[in-house]
Image 1 (cartoon, helix red, strand yellow):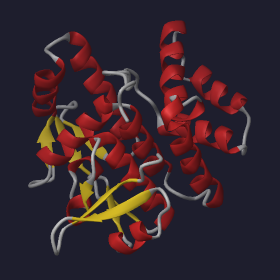
Image 2 (spheres, helix red, strand yellow):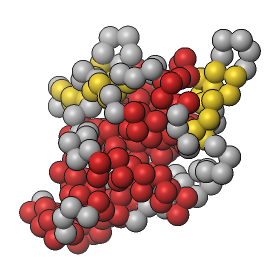
Image 3 (cartoon, rainbow, N blue to C red):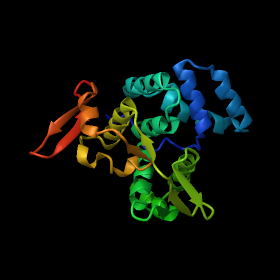
Length: 240
C-alpha cells in the first residue's frame, strides 16, 4: 500500500483555507482561481509556491494513483456534507499520503497523551532517530507542526517550544468515521484492533461518536476479522 510513498514530502506549511479551496475545487463547488488568489495573497516566492502546490496536489488535487479512489470517496463525503470538518478530511488524507506527517502526528499524540502537552524538542528528537539528524528533518517537522496548529489540532506556545493538545473534535458522520479508519490502516500498513482504534495516537485530534463495530460492519471498503473470542481487527478489503 505504501511502496510509492515519499519518505518525507510534506515540506511546506499548508494553511487550512488553502485546503478548503482545494477541496471545494475538487468537489466542483468553486474554480481553481480562488485557490490561486489565496496563494498569491500569501506572498509566496516562485519556488515556495511550486512546492506548496505539490503538497496540495498530492493531498487533494492530483493524489497518487493508488489513493485516487480513497481521495474521491473523501470528496464525496464533503459533497454530501459541505459543513463537515475539512480538518478531519485533510488529516486522513495527509496520514494516508505522507508517512512523515503521520509519524509526527503519532508522536505528538503519544507524547501528549498523559498530560495534554509535550515539548517540540521531544518530537524533533524522535523524528531525527527515525529519519536522521539533518536540517531537512528538523525543518519539515516544523512545517508539519505549524500546519497541525493552523488546522486547529494543537497549540504552539512558548515560541513553539511546547505543544498543547487541543480538545478533540467529536465526529458523528458514519462515512467520515470509516474513511478515517481506512486512512489509519493505510498509514499503519496492517489491520488494526477495533478495541484500540479510538486510542491510536495518530488519531488524537478526533473522537468517534458512533459504535465502531457497527459502523465498520456496514462499510464496503473495510472488513472485520476475529482473532480469538473477544478480539476483532479491521482491515482493508482485499480488492482495495
